[in-house]
Image 1 (cartoon, rainbow, N blue to C red):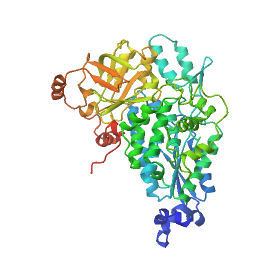
Image 2: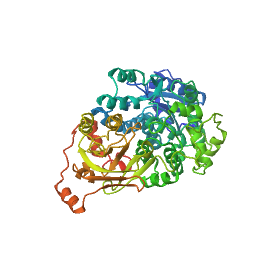
Image 3: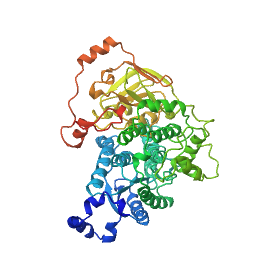
Image 4: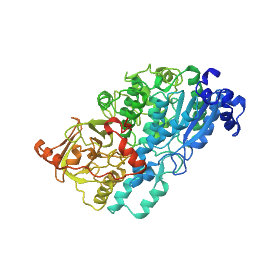
Length: 561
């Protein structure tokens, strides 16, 4: 496999690189090991929470797959943020930032050490898009595996997820549940290793790895504690080596057609709105011109055929038992909604992979339906534009039955202010809660508003109060929640000009979100508006705020050249 070592030979080949090889021999590699392709195994691992606690073990299994395929693996850990822990605090500002840190970290390690290929193991929300961004950017033979979900929790005989705990906080603040019940949920919501159990961001992005063709079919749905995880980790290591032998690189796989497949899966499943932000960012790294208009176009032609939390009834574990992502993809393929000739890392097309994949012969219509009999006639995510969001905004229509909401604005310049208002009973039926200066630049970091939306839902106002923000939402959010409003408040977007009492009109079917204030009045307010001083003047968040782009572009970093 000497011809597969074009990169590593530049670092370790020839007599003049004897000092470089000495470092590898110091950690136990032989001349035979060094003569093989060197493959970086990037593992997003840490002990901060359950989402990635198990990934190190899976990385070691993936190493054996690399060895079986003829390579020499080199495992390294990548930092991450556990969104559910950071939620509702200053720490959440680092969540989206971590996506860029992950991508940059993989680029740094792989390029600095001249690795010939990459195996990536992801877990919590930002780890999957961050790793995919890195694979697209570096563009050497690669494969990725999502490390899986937790099993459902249990509360008084019914299954629960972390979503129930967040909403229980709102219920408790209204005296609807006891402190004992809240504690029972807290103790039992996450019973095993793995990511949050519903179709939230982590599980959404896990399935997207399959739709993009960058992961083995069926690999995203087995729970973290399922023995299939070990099998898939081993096979993913081998798959990276096979891709190397075939000369398949990530950009060969992540084409515009592959991204259309991924967006189609996102819409059909009713996945997280964060999927929009992340797919835009991954596409940019892959050199693919994906835009919000593509999401809107695909969403109109793709019905929602999946019934999963937060808007539905079931968990990722339930989906796994009936066939996982391949079942959804097969339903879409049968309806002619996928590019079946799209290449995958196996060297075979998506169509051939789906033909070979065996779906369990069990009833599944309660979770996944045929396209002709959908849960919704359109995709689970809708792109909105209008006078409040000229560049665009997103709403998860599968998480609410409300299609129109018109009401007075109650304006807050931070998530904390809004949360205090909700829990103290200051938000009334019909209100439109505006949370601004929480965008990519203004936050900075575009925090998720799960604590606020869950508190609203827990008070029984989920379909009676709208929340509009230039920040983001968790995949666990439900209700009338419009996020990613662009341009954001920090750059003087219309959301910065909203005042208490202004009427906001949300019309999902028309794809509109409008501020019902005259142009003359808005022009007057714009002249008086002044940008807020930066919240951070040093450190990572200051660096991020100075470089980050609009949410309508995926909130990617754009170096000032």
